[in-house]
Length: 156
Image (cartoon, rainbow, N blue to C red; front, side, top):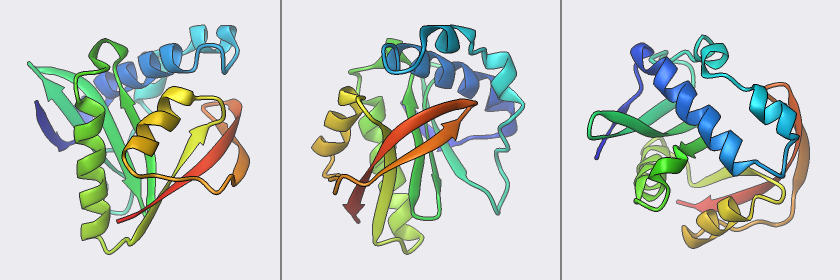
């Protein structure tokens, strides 16, 4: 598996992974009609990879196929998504390890990530990686959906 910075040509493949991960991972947590309406074609144009002042996205490529992504900005892990077909193969662990290393290299000493309330799979993943929560919650609008999230933090 190769981990590398995302480039503009990755936009559709990233959007496809992002949509698939939401559609499977958030099933039962967000309305089915909303999840079923998500389309990679609609999302791809929103990505701005390669900008020096914006978020940094790393992609995981396995056997020529983009299977995961992690996005960091400031002290935040903004996104970590793996195609459900690649779950359990270590893609998420590799991406989060590199994201932590990149955050630390940028001088971040404590990172945070917001997790959809009720997403026990993600909570277990972050807890196994040493992230903890103090119970801080927020309501946010992501991709047009109002979501309830809980904060996780980790010392780097």
